[in-house]
Length: 413
Image (cartoon, rainbow, N blue to C red; front, side):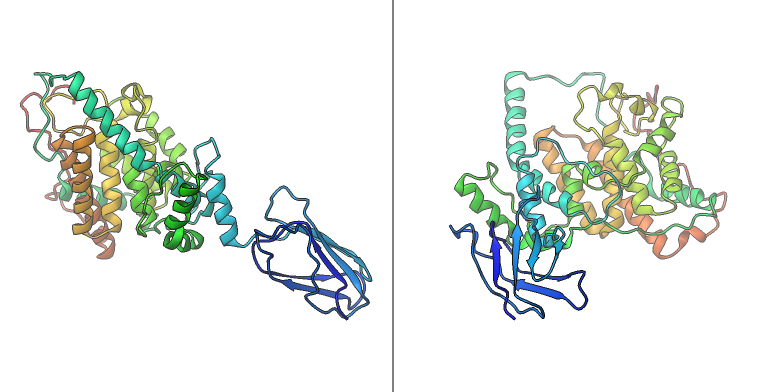
């Protein structure tokens, strides 16, 4: 038998199949059809796409859900029953996230640990499109500030030129920490990646957003993402604390805040995060990075309670009030070094330092900390691969990894 009538009050953007069984024995309705064109001016269109093993019926889809791409309906006539909301195809749902990100006034923040997050990926792409404009604005403001209000560096402060962290010794200290917790076995961990929908979108998404920009539907000129990894883009922009949440950040911060002011060293933060993340080295470094860099542009962050717990890890002539910079740069670079080759990771951190030169001015000490972080991450990767953490350390193995001896005056460190 033929379906008498299939009515739609809204054109659907994709092909789907629905199978509905009524309460009557052996009474089955199968519907399969292609979407109407979105440009079709006809709001209702009757089609007869299939056959059913029952009497003639009318099948009607009625749009009455809050989501314009979801549909619900009912069967009437020779059979009875209702059809529940139909799920969106992943690709259509992802594109709806892309559009909603343009009007959402709230910045995206993951509510918990998600290795795959299509909605977050869509919102991230929209936020990355804003980066070129923000960089140009920041560069302009920096240029005007230096031109109109030139400030000399204080004579009592000199930026260090000597690397403050000995990475071999720090690796030994980490092995010691791992061996102090034999109940936990270290592992590499799994990197956050683009969702399958986002991976497909990266191939054509630039042109899709460019079309909307030309039409005036999108205010940002799209950034060509060049199929770069999600991890690289987030780390470069400082967005890991919103799009790569581990769910352990709050617990780590609570642990660190219980320590005396100025007492925390790099291995202390690593230890607490390592225990919370049950030996997952990737999440250990990421949790530390997210906790330390949760608000990098806060103007008065030198007064932040957590910042006061940190020791000063820069090799400068005089400690500064803001300690966060050196810390989250180190953990971020270590995270990148853990996941990428030594050459790639060190090249990236040096490139990052070149960009900072234009936006913030020269800071060799920050560059040295970045390079040390990347080197430390590479050593952690080698340690895991070769299971060096199982080796017994002797009393002659150096574990004193901080070297702040460049200047004779090391007070208040």
